[in-house]
Every structure is written in C-alpha cells, then in structure tokens.
Length: 162
Image (cartoon, rainbow, N blue to C red; front, side, top):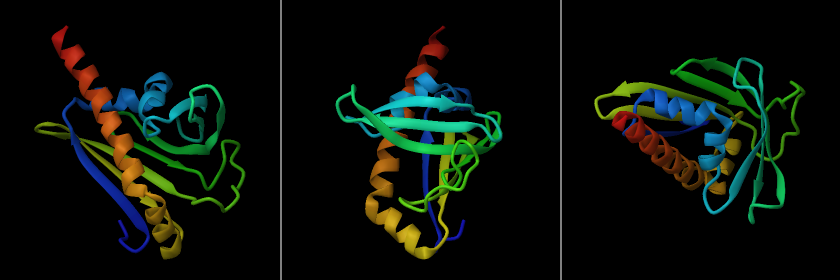
C-alpha cells in the first residue's frame, strides 16, 4: 500500500471466509450490501473471474435504476482475493477518467474471530486519492463493509446452526 495513492479499510468480520466470499461472489447477495442503505443496488452483468464483467446500477427508490459501476475483474482467487478496476469497462475499453478511477484489491484472511477483510483502493495520483476521500470513501465503503459483515455473519450463523 502506498499511503499517498491508496485508501484502505480493514475489519474483522465474525463469519467464516466462505460466508464473506459468497457475499462477494453471489450477485444476489452482493446486491444486498454493495451500496450503503437506503440506496438499492442491481447487478446488471456479473462474471466474477479474471477479465469478467462487473456492472451495477443504483436506485434511490428501488424502482428507477441508473448506472453505477462499469468495471472488470482483474483477478479472482477463490476464498482469498478479488481485484477489480473501473479504469477499464466491462468490455475492456479505457473508461472515461471521471469520476474517480480505481483499482481495488479485496483480501480475505482467516482470523481467530472469523475473517480479516481488507480493501485497498488504488488511485493514479494523490489528487485522485484526496478527491475520493473527500467524496466519502471511508463513510461509503465503511457502510458497505458493515452491511457485508451483517450479511456474512447472518449466513455464517445460519450455516453453523445446521
């Protein structure tokens, strides 16, 4: 991580890695946590594999959706790591430089209390990093991560009860 270019978020999620992984990989679960509530997310195109599409839309009312993310997965390592970018769109074409263009790396590591979840979001220059921070990176990604934790912990508890 380069502190001048990157933003990071880390949290222990009290659920097994498999539950956190499923919340990331299953598009129906992903829709439930990716966007901070009360906004709604819809997965439009989802191919969680190297080079696959990552396209989502958002809605304030749950009915009228607008484009949110047109990105691609760069790397998907089962139960361990997901890397995606919106610098390339879902068809591998260079994306318009606005809004903030990122490459994000999500890692999942076993932890005595569940899963250590870490998101590192890389930017092209310090100005982009600063701008993303000012747009509310920590609030937005923090809220989404809390929602992810809630879903994964609920799924992990349900699985453990079986």
